[in-house]
Amino acid sequence: MKRGLFFAAILFVMQACFSPALYAQRSAHTGVAAWSFRLFPLEVALLKADSTGVKYIEAFGGQLLEKGGSTFSPAMPDDSIQWLKNQLLQRKLQMRSAYLPAPTTKEAWEQAFRFAHALGLSYITTEPQPEHFDLLNKLGTQYQIKIALHNHPRGSSRFWHPDSVLAALKGRPQLGVCADVGHWARSGINIVTALRQLKGHIIALHIKDIDTFDKTDAADVPLGTGVIDFRAICHEMKQQQFSGYYIIEREGNWHNNVPEIKAAVKLFNDISR
Image 1 (tube, one colour):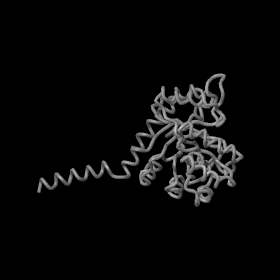
Image 2 (cartoon, rainbow, N blue to C red):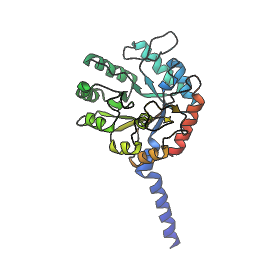
Image 3 (tube, rainbow, N blue to C red):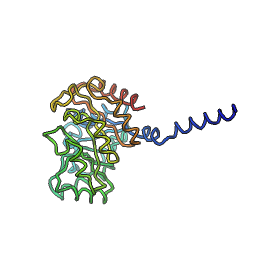
Image 4 (cartoon, one colour):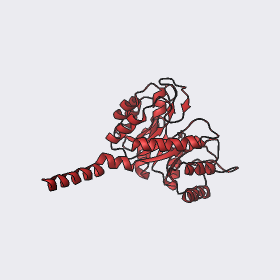
């Protein structure tokens, strides 16, 4: 009897350790948005990101690469792309995504995908025009790079509500979601309900906190000090067996927000575990 109970206990522990939900949660990745360091060149942003303890950084279009240098964009020359790859290697950081302003022509989109491919990106975070949805699905298949539709607050983004995102995704498997939970809260969207609505399509989440719900210009505050329930978010994503990216953003205290981001990374990782 005791021997049977012993093996039953061992089996329970093994099932807990290797259950799909827990395994998927451990395989999700925490990173930081270079946008948090937008006042500095990307070279400095990489140093700041490295100091927060993350292994992933999401770039954004328009940031200076280094003081006096070119900017991060699909028009970057090959030597600048190689420079950036070397910088990432030195910092032991990985860049799997970049937020790019949506191009307005087919040719510019093709350039953006070639650029993303050269950098080894897995997805492009952006807010494209409807007339380009089918083109992006085609290019995504060709280059094996996803498009993650990003939401800004209502009144400033066509993707502010999950309904509009689902309409864009229909029949386009290369399109997915980068859910900005702070902007959803600013728009009065119930975050957990929206995550459930978009289940199976979420590539990444932008993680930030705000001081007031349902206020489009609510102030960004350090993670855990605002109105967003991150435990509920992590619980929902665990249920979804999420294995994508949590990208921490801090849109405030721009000159000295590294300690806040470092604390946010620790807090979020503790909650998600």
